Length: 394
Image (cartoon, rainbow, N blue to C red):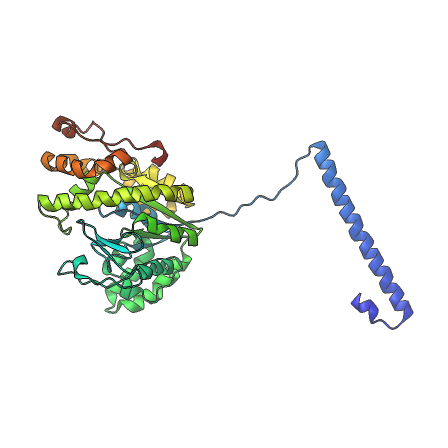
C-alpha cells in the first residue's frame, strides 16, 4: 500500500489496486480450503498430522551424601561418562572434616561439635580443623556461589577455592586433557584455563559430588535451576563407620572415636532424611533418594535406570568404563562382589551394639534392621535392610 500511495499516474494506481485485490482473494481462498480440509478430516475421522515435541531435556546432577557412603561409585557412574563434566568434592579444600548445617551452623563430620556462624563470613575457627589441616576459609554464601559457578561453567577463582590434584585425578574423561597438561607443567593455572571452561560448556551434563551440606540447603539451588536433579545417597551407618575406621586417612582410631563418629553421622542422616522428605514433596521429579545397598547390587543395570532418570544417553559408547568394570564380575574379589555388606565380617559385635544405641532413629526411618543375636550378624544371608519400594532404583 505504501507503494500505491506514492504512484503518480492513475493507470499505475489502478494496476496496483487490481494486484492487491487479486492477492487478497488468493489468500482468502487458500485459507478457506485449509479450513474446509481440516473440518472434513475431523468429520471423517482421518488422522491429522501433528508435529511432535521432540525436545529432550538433559539434566545436570548434584550427588549428595556422606564420606564412605558410595558417593565415589556414584560419581564414577554419572561423572565418568564421556558426555559429563565432573567436579569431585568442590568443598573438600575448604571444609575437609566439616559441613554446613542449615543457614547458620557449621558442624564436624566426625564428632558432635557444631557452632553458630554468619553465613556471609568465612569460617576460620580452629575447632573446625585438625592442627595439620591447611584450610582455605569459605563462607556458606561463597559455597553456594561456587556451585552456581560450576553449573554456569565459570572458573575464575576456581584454583584458589576448589582445585586440588585430586579434583583432576577423580574428574573422569572431562579432565583427561587437563591431567596431561598438569603433569607436564609446573603451573596448573594455564592448564585449567585452557581446557576446563571449554570442556564444561561442551558437556551435556555437569555433575558435582557435594558431601558437606545438609539437604535443606539444596532447596534454593533446585529452585534456581530447573535443569538440576539431586541424588541423595544413604547407606547403613554401620557400614559407613566400619569403612571410615578402616580408612587410614579418616580421623577415628579408637572405640570412643567410633562412637562419637556414629553420633555425629546418625544425627546428620536423620536430619537429612526428614528434610529430604520436604524436598521430595516440593521437587518430586528432581530429588531422588538412592540406597547404596540397592545401587551396589547389579550396578550396571541400576546405572542405566539412573541414566534414564537424568535424561542421559543410553548409548554404551558414552560410558565405556562402566561397561568394562561392572558388567564383567567373574574376577572380582568376594569383598568387591558384596561391598554393601562386607562390614559384617570386620566390625566387632561389641562395637556394633554400641552403634545401635545411638543410631536407632536412623534404622527406624530408613529401614535398617537391628541384629539381636551374634548369629544373625554372622549369617550374611540374613538381610540387614528393607528398602522402601519408593526408594528402589527400579
